Length: 495
Ligand SMILES: [Zn+2]
Image 1: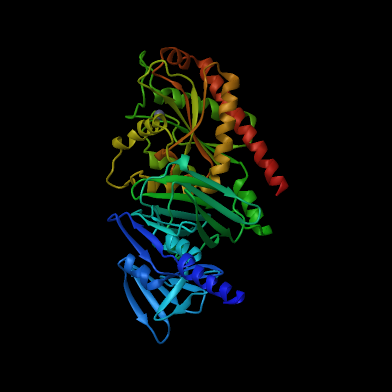
Image 2: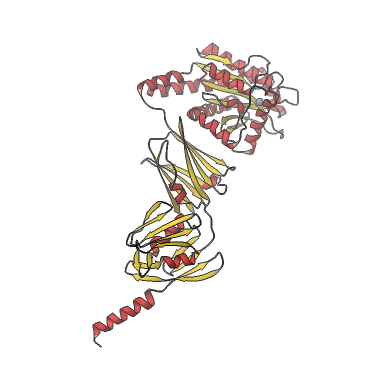
């Protein structure tokens, strides 16, 4: 035996006995173990497609002449062809870095390339350990199921269907400078085949879904820049909703139109409650409807005396005005700002201070509680000719979306009102909050709702009974409106 022959012999021995050891399969669904035949090549381990089909109890279709095998797994169909690097899963094409090869009546697939595709598309519970040649199959279901994109006049809505609830703590969003927007969902397991089927429209050019360890990343290529984005949770149906706001087009005519539309020439002041709806009531008998009307009138007087801004009151006397009618009055008068004034109430008599609300799904129980109290006035309305859509997550998201072009301005105004109130008052600044208020829905202008103080707090009630105290509040709201007008005009001058 000469030396080269010995080497060839040893090589053959090693490749057949050591390198071509089968892939061991542990199936956690029934705790069974099995093996899949392999071939060893310089580029790595190749396994038998028929062997995999057997292990997965997959129905297969063979076309020997065309060297094709189709695996059926549940509703999924995986097409494998010999001598190509392409795999087709449910009409989606995936490319492997190596070719599938023919051996006998079987097709062998590169293990390191194929199993990740299978995991991403059909079997999220599958893990393959390349070093140990161990395939572990567990019953795990995708929880990120699909994506729908809706196009609206002023933005695009992304709805990610999920199997379970994903809260704010699990979701992060990010826009990079190259025109991509990312949503990362911690604990998500994404059905990438479903995401690939998404019809892209609106500001979305392309969607790419990636499973990054324990997180899912959805990457959206944008057709144009977005002005901002909002995130909402919806529990029934389970979905994560993200709205992307797009800026108004920038043609000269459009800018002029926008400038005129935004010129702050009319302000709508809305005194909460009125008539048969007294609102909340203090221990000493003070009625919210009287306090709000007085503050609104004082604010209006300051505006009329010191500016050329037209003031529209939704009510200037003690009458009942339905909530829906208040925004209607505001829109019909071409209002450029809508400020609704209210007094707060809380079972805890120590609660005190002032807060300003934006129309958006409520974030805290306290905020939702305030909104449901303020919304209670609809029960007093004649419901025969006007129906309210229920303020469920879905409807509220739509209502908020319809106002999204005013969102930034509403936020600015709310922040300015809080700042000016804290300058004038000793009671605590409770900040800007958000919840679903009927009185703000449908307003075609920046809009906020101010809770100036707690009638349930005896000290604040006493204060609110004082004319000087109410004048201070009116002055603060007036100052905030002026600040807002100045900042707005600055922006318009730059445009
Ligand atoms: Zn109220």
